[in-house]
Image (tube, rainbow, N blue to C red; front, side, top):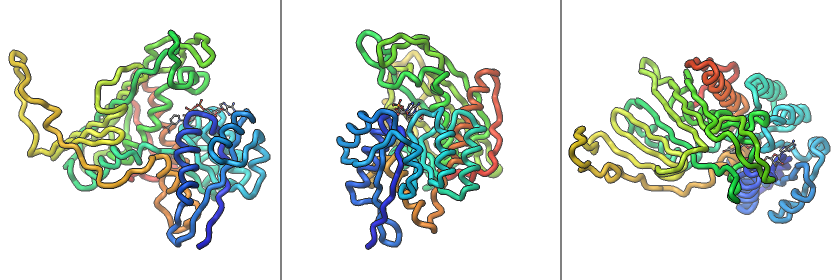
Length: 397
Ligand SMILES: NC(=O)c1ccc[n+]([C@@H]2O[C@H](COP(=O)([O-])OP(=O)(O)OC[C@H]3O[C@@H](n4cnc5c(N)ncnc54)[C@H](O)[C@@H]3O)[C@@H](O)[C@H]2O)c1
């Protein structure tokens, strides 16, 4: 059976996400497993060229992972007709300009989120991609986390009844970088002028999670904070944190025809110490049952197994609440979430009958829209409606 070579121009792969999730856990893993199988039996084998600014870093990365091609010249890479896909995991600010360039060069596009710093730019690249007739996709990795796939299965099986509310807790302590303890995230995350900030970063994610799993986001009320005003960067220099490091947001979601809205509250914080099941947890309450999902695991409590607490602060609690939940089994092997989406996108590139790839630049623009409205809500201290975006498909995975 035929093997198709897929030349991928990978920009920004010396970064944290580019190296770990996209190059190593996705593209190298796909190469190691013999490519991606298409419905007709053909296989697609990715052949990446690593593009960036630092030739030595690129060479070291390529050697470490068995990649033969690198370049510091993006224009030359885009001019090669044998490489048909442009992938971007570099800095957010340059993204719309580089994606536009790739579209003009006739490339298909797959990109990290946020797709652009502003909604206007995000929509412009989505519309340019549509007009050019290229295929496009945006990383929406959380949808393929085992914990969230379990939530989706619960939803599809009717476990929840009518979903009332969703409470999300995301975050962990990101070290400030002083007393010899380097920060575990890049310093640009904490500088507004470099497109940092947790609202821009995380509301993009919450948009597709909420839209796809529970209901379209209809409104947002968001309060941001910069709890830690100074941090220490990669070179040991103290800098002013100009971007938000925590966000406390409430969303109204479409609860379905004739139904009340679902209320979602999500705290996102790089300034909190974890005492919960995982780095992100979603607690879903429905009329027939509740669930709490982390990255991997999911615990459930159906209506008939719900304990009956009575408020009496004079008596020590007699119910072990954690023991009243049942852990869902992992009935299948879950692959890396980034790799799963890469495989879906690669199939979408070569299989014209595949209409299932909904996570495109318009879906990415919806994430940027929510982040932008979150920032506006914070600045204006009010709840804002989230209007539909022209070109975007209704979400439901
Ligand atoms: N999907 C997710 O869960 C997730 C998580 C974190 C970050 N991200 C996104 O991934 C992207 C990268 O984030 P990261 O945490 O890997 O950051 P990083 O700082 O570790 O990496 C950034 C990359 O961009 C390159 N770069 C920076 N400035 C550049 C310039 N002027 N010209 C060319 N290249 C430049 C760097 O060399 C590096 O390769 C961001 O857009 C971020 O929002 C996504």
